[in-house]
Each structure stands twice: as C-alpha cells, then as structure tokens.
Amino acid sequence: MIKNLIKVTLVTITVQIFISCNSNTKNENPSTAKETKITAYKNGHIMTKAEQDSLTPDHVLQQFQDGNERFNTGNITQREHSEAIRKAATGGQFPKAMVLSCVDSRVPVEDVFDQGIGDVFVGRVAGNFVNTDLLGSMEFACKVAGAKLIIVMGHQHCGAVKGAIDDVHLGNITSMLANIKPAVEMSKNFEGEKSSKNEAYVKLVAQNNVRNTIAQIRVKSEILKEMEAKGEIKIVGAFYTLRTGKLEFVN
Image (cartoon, rainbow, N blue to C red):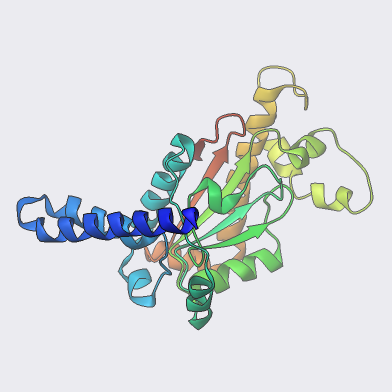
C-alpha cells in the first residue's frame, strides 16, 4: 500500500514537472526543453520507425557514449519493463545499433550503454570476432532493420584473448581461438613481456582484435562496406574496462 502511494506520488510529481517544462518553453533554450521532454518519456518508451529514421550514425554514437557516462556515474535511466511496455514492443523493432560483444558475464551490454527494450541488437561470442552467422546478423540489423551503428566491443581481462596468447588447445575452443590469433600477430612489436599475465599486453591484443574484427567486417560484407561508404552506418570499436566500467573507443 505504501509502495503504491509512493509510486503514485512520484508519477504525479513527474507529470507536474513535465507540464511545467512545457508551459515555460518560450523562456528556455530550445535544446534544453527538448532534452527535458525526452527524459520525461524515455523510461517507458519503445523506439519507433520515424525516430529511427531521424537518427544519423553520429547521433546514435553520441547517445551510446552518453549512456556509458550515465552508467559510470550511476545516473542510469529508470526504465519501466511492465507488460504494457513489453506488449508495445511486439509490433516491430527499430533498434539504433548493433553491438558485437564477448560472452563475458561481466559485460552486460544494454547496461553498459544504458539502453532499453528495442534499442539495440546484441551479438555475442567469446573474443568478439566475426563469422558468417554474425555477419549475417549485422546485415539484418543494418540493411533490413535499419540500425545506424555497429560497435565491436572488446574488454579487459578477456579469457578468449588470453587463451589465444597462451595457444590453448581444448576441444572446440582450439578452433574458436584461431579467430583471435591474427590479433596476437598484430601485437608482435609490443615492448615488454608477451604473456597473458601482462595486463598491458593483453589489452593491446584485445584492442588489436577489435581492429581486426572491424577489418573483417569490411572485407567479408559488401553490404555493410557499401552502407558505411554511403554514410548510412558507422562501424566503430570500443574497449571496456571491467574495473571502471568506462569505454575507450579504438581507432
């Protein structure tokens, strides 16, 4: 009973603030007023086709960068996942981006970027490399479903990267790690101990793995390469630090 009363009170206050913001827009900076309105409805909002069409790849990238900043500061969006919201999402999906991430359980993709239901396609495989299935998923996400951004995200202390460095041989893991070996070769000029125990070296290999994955996307998908050349999408790399929750974007 008390929880319901608090919830009603908070909703009432939110509505009053939103109405107040609308009534004072003549005296406000237009961009500030717009941001206030977006914040007011975002927590229960599902992306529409019109909204997706209005976004550019740079807009989406900025939104994801801003989302990671909110994640880092603890100022994350309080999202509603009610039955009504889930039902609204059944009419179609119009995500803004596709993120290729490692399977690591410490990297919750939607949380890292502070995104909600219907905002992002997520593909995951140990070592965040691409194969035919993931390339097809990316082509579906961008060419068919309209996503504007592809983020390839590696991370600190990646077990798959360490396995490739150590040349691990174990069942199907052996052939999986072969996809990451090019990044080890790319890092051969590293000055220092080339060991999975050297955090600086592991980070370099992980970042080179992101770079190699992006190169493979462009080489193996004519669809995505052409879309990027036309400015319809952007393909970027990122490195996630488990310790801080922050992203470094990889050139």
